[in-house]
Structure formats: structure tokens, C-alpha cells
Length: 150
Image (cartoon, rainbow, N blue to C red; front, side):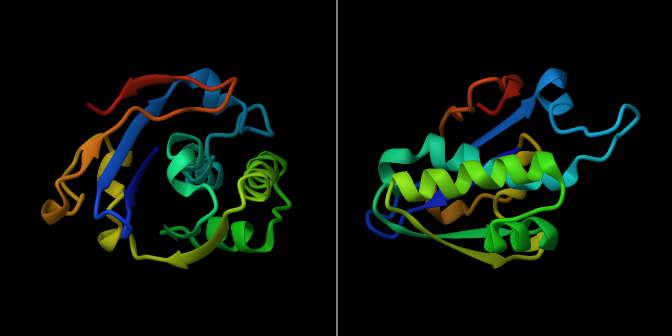
């Protein structure tokens, strides 16, 4: 998972990327042989971004660009019929309420998504003119990474 923050208030750009450990990913499965957890993998960085940049996002309007339509619509509606996705969405809603933050979710094609690189553990897609600083992601309790972008 990965994320990029470009803050127009001060012009700073930061990013994070990490590979979640197997135990963390297992929490998203609802069936014993399930292998696809893409919806949760697309929603989870929204939660990690809020925790990682909590002081910068507090009390602000924030635009989140998402390259997965199902995840974007779930975040907009604050609902998903998939229970692991709904759990993540409820954490997003709770964080926004408690931190007086107003999210807006917009679609971005994968090819134009500057977070795609950090989510793949590389910095190729991060805007070069921004000189993004890599930060360690803050994961929710119960989650851990096996590798982190440096």
C-alpha cells in the first residue's frame, strides 16, 4: 500500500509505501480459499494516510485520489456490502468526524496515480518537481508491514 500527500498550504510533498505482512492481509478475507482482497487494499491506504498525516489533515478539506472505482464509491457512500471493506470505511468516517476533516474522493487513472509507485515500493511515479520526502507509515493497531519504503 502507498500514499502521497501534496500539501498546497506549504508546498511540501511526502509519501509512504509498505508491504503488509500476511497476517494483516488475512484479516480482509471472508472465505477460507479467498485470494482477492483488492477492495480492501485500495481502501486501507486511505486509513493509513489519515493516521500518518493526522496533524496535517486535522480540520482540513482533503481530496483523496483513488484509482479503484469500487473503493471510491464505497468511501463516498460510507458503505460496502463486504464486511472487511465496511470496517475500514467506518474507521475512515470515524476519523474524519473526530478530526473535523472533510474528504472528497476523486477518480484518477492508475497510469496517472502518483501513489502507484510507493504502493509498489518505488518512487518512479512521485512528482519529481515536488521532491517528496519518504515517511514511515503509521498503521492501525493489529496491522504490521513486512517491508517499508525507504
